[in-house]
Image (cartoon, rainbow, N blue to C red):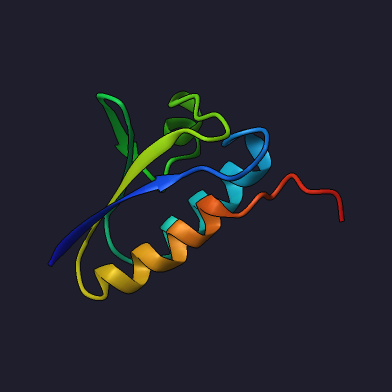
Length: 90
């Protein structure tokens, strides 16, 4: 089963090192293939270099695609990570 979803990035500084690391670790732990796309470029969501190479900024729309069992649940979890502002001061 494959599922895709468009998500707007919430981190105020986009997918730079810290938010990208959080997202990539979740994609790695999903146990199924996950891709993230911005515009025409699609990369493996489990690759920190791939994700950082997209240059995703705050407010950008990205498309997540998950192949495998529980694709919708995996999309829910990953989308929540992307829409959260991980740059907020604690």
